[in-house]
Amino acid sequence: MELNKDLIIVHFQEDFFDNTNQRIKNTVKENLQPLVDAAQTTDIHVSFWEDNTIANTASVIPIPPLSEKVSQLDAEKGLLNTDYPLKGTEIILAGGWFGSCINGAIETVMSSFVKSPIIKKTGELTIRILENAVYKQNNLLSELDDSKIVSGIQGAFNDSSAVSEPVVQNRGLRFKIIRTKTQEIITEQIVVPLPDKPKERMFDVIFLID
Image (cartoon, rainbow, N blue to C red; front, side):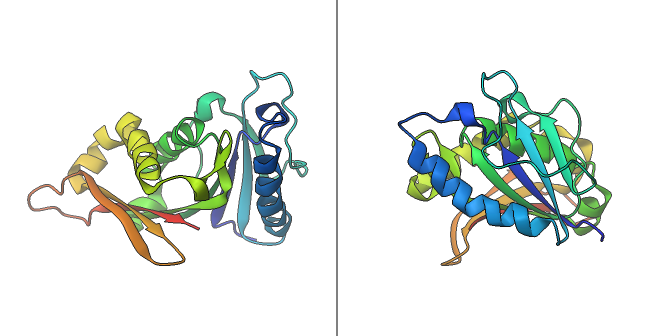
């Protein structure tokens, strides 16, 4: 089966939880476990991005045997030391912390984004952020104000070296954040303006808050 999507689970490890945020742990697990199980028979590649600097590194969700469909990577602060090979133009992003390690994961994805032949061709990447499977310490993404969601994602773009890549400078880059249920556009921002007389369409990164 050809893999066309990525499910990236960032820092969903036992040592990120204590007696103050068990509710978050349980809710995220309830939302993620079915996706991980279903991915074994679908076109989704599951990648566990872990922080091995913490004491108890065990994943809250049991990691299936490593294979072409499952990977386990060391990503302290959500940042990989190497490029992540994107499987397609859609990513499901889950885990924590939003605003820090999730930012790092978005930075890493953006680095891969500008090097992906399929994305260069289509010009678009969709990142689905699961509102009940992305957390910030004691809060789910669904409980955060829109302003915090926008500033978190904007911060990731500000820190990403992808925006300075020649291919992005030649085509421009825009991102949107959309609430899937209501189709409300929370924000739309042009990070790199479209140059004069562009030869190709502007890059679009669409964040769907699912």
